[in-house]
Length: 337
Image 1 (cartoon, rainbow, N blue to C red):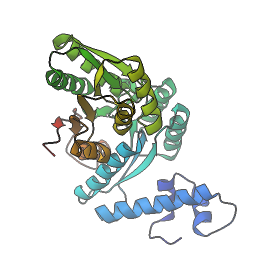
Image 2 (spheres, one colour; image 1 turned 90 degrees about the vertical axis):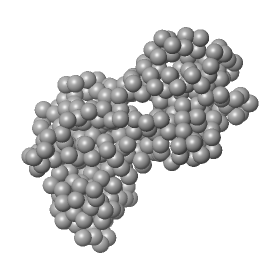
Image 3 (cartoon, one colour; image 1 turned 120 degrees about the vertical axis):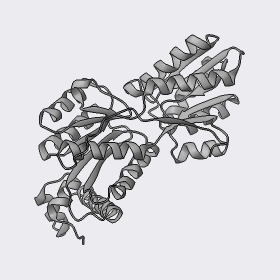
Image 4 (cartoon, rainbow, N blue to C red; image 1 turned 180 degrees about the horizontal axis):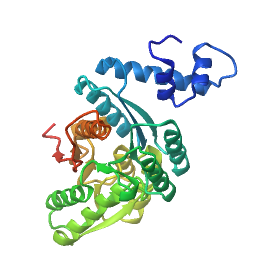
């Protein structure tokens, strides 16, 4: 397995010991196939990042830990890698620890490994679980700043939050949807990937407050735990449609929108207004097909840039301080594409 990177750098990227990586690179026996795959993936990641940014070494290494559907995590990965090139001479490397359904125990295990190995900063999208919060506090105590991303944790567990103001985003979705629905009564299906994510809860809270204040004739039916995945999301939505014949629109803070529409199609039901979040590939295709009415979107590259610059300043590698502020969001419609 040929490459152009120092052994220490490959080991850091793969999250493995120097001895294990050495055994893999020299083709020695006694190494599991999954370990060899991790080393190969680490080299591929380094090739991509060095090729994009022209790095000759690493000044800051960031760990991104996310439980998220693949379509969203791919968009985040692309945003971070694009920003590496935009930073010019700044030397920043990103290592990703991503899973669609990681679970609290697995996330805690990843965070502990990062704390033992060291890092210049952790970007964390994870549920508000007591053990995750505890480990995030331990990371900060070890001098590794934790920045929550898209969904938040209590303040002792993080140095700051990066992403849109989720309450305001939910308010904006409700305001536009209420106007589009008019005065006819009916229910809106609110689709959360999981109640464990504080960011989605905040979006729903803003949505509920705006509807109650200005569109009280519209009621809400909430579903969750589809995790933004195709089969599980379709199943929970199908159950709600069977139980609530007055559902005629959808607000989806949690994603899995193709699955939501499949459930409507299978039930032979129409969706008058469908509001989603994030302009990933799947949502862009649904907007182009006019299956989504609008998407609330913010610039992930700006988030990645803010994170990188914040950590560079935190470690005294850049002089200009960075204030972590909520990202601006925009409403994207089929027409604006």
